[in-house]
Image (cartoon, rainbow, N blue to C red; front, side, top):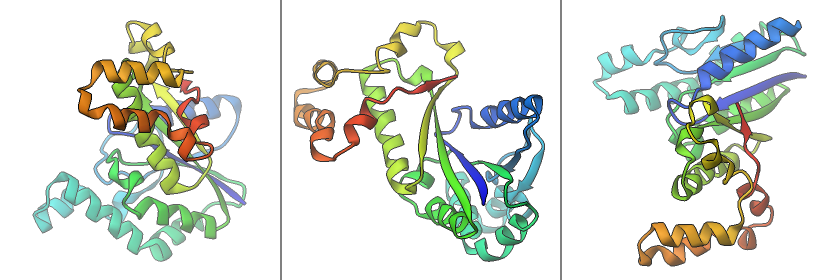
Amino acid sequence: MGYAQLVIGPAGSGKSTYCSKLHEHCTTVGRNIHIINLDPAAENFDYPVAMDIRELVSLDDVMEELGLGPNGGLLYCMEHLEDNLDDWLTEELDNYLDDDYLVFDCPGQIELFSHVPVLKNFVDHLKRKNFSVCAVYLLDSQFMTDVTKFISGCMSSLSAMVQLEVPHVNILSKMDLVAKKKDVEDFLNPEPQVLLSELNQRMAPQFAKLNKSLVELHKLCPGADRYLHSVWRRC
């Protein structure tokens, strides 16, 4: 059995830096991992690239030849990857041993891991190839300093968790850039009623029912409360 980690999260959340530091750490402790680039728009890397989607398709070529914008072009690239799972990806995976650990540095377009099925089908393909897969979701801690951003971050991460259906770890990145650490600490293990009160204070009255539904999510979906209240890992 092989092992695979999908590094996902919004653009600019530090996914490539995480992959670089993970590779650096594993090299130091004598563990072998392989970092794979799944971003067809990436150009510079601080880690050795073991496999690169740009060998299959690049965003620049797609935008030039098809006249697509950056977002449309990236979706086209990922759908092209999906069409080549049984060919290009399978051939590349055959280069690794059964116990190898692969880390996939994914693009930052949120729709790829929230509702577009591309990464879900990618994960299913890895599972069929006998890989044990987990997801690591990074979110910039600077965007978790008030209740509205906290709820937004939780919902986007929850959407990815439900979509991919694999073991899932959340990480708050760039903690060194947060001026007031307490602003983040307050959301690491929040009380639902406190969240509701703060949401109602920050938002217009017409959103009161929506706020209540979000905070009471644990009553509607078993286990969601553990997610909403989960302690985010910090780095």
